[in-house]
Length: 352
Image (cartoon, rainbow, N blue to C red; front, side, top):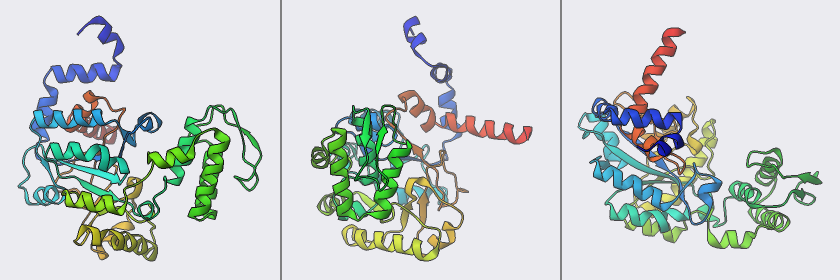
């Protein structure tokens, strides 16, 4: 390792590099061999989406590097249902991995699926269905993306917000107040056609071509026809709610699951009993309600591996991301960082 290379590495990367060199990744892999790793992906980058939201969009070449590493290091990749069943029965092969993809972005079909097919991998695709029925860019993502893309320093929100006026946006971020005021207004007060009109006007004022964004499908989900093709190719389509929300009241939760099922089950050709929580967010009140609806497993975004004692409705996953380095990915999948988290957790409990 050259001096220049060492200086370019962060303290964390140096620690991980040294740990791998000492064989600690191999040791962790052996110690965690009976656990199940569930990987989580979302969309894949047509253009610059990976720079906009690296936790949500990944370049195709990064995905290919991950899959080649898993193959070269002989990590068995199982379908979700098989992985969970074998975890429970004690027949899980060592270091087993499941690959899940959330939301159902159009880029999954066009960019990622050819790779999964080439590697012989069965993925579970959790599909949220509102934007499959309405093939437009996801509203909140489109608002955030246009603010991220603009070079404007100010915006006149008259006609966009009810109390509109000129606002400075030179240092605006996707989480800034003006961005979320527009999102909240559109989602709570407008129908789909009105939201599309708002996005067009917003794009005009920010000098971002919304029609091109719509045409390129950077922030759009798969169509019914594309879903049919994915199912024919062996993709395991599963539940992710209709509107990407999961209420805690029984009637609201049942509505979201039933609308999701009503759209997906005729396409999947089977009963759907596996769920991904929207944004990975769940509460204890969800569990008995999901059980009554016949949901057998549900995945979260809580980082970690799964063992036979993990509740099937709160399965852990590793959110892989474009800005997660290959070294960090290896540290997660081998279980090295899992062991560190457990050691740190025990130390904190002891101190407390």
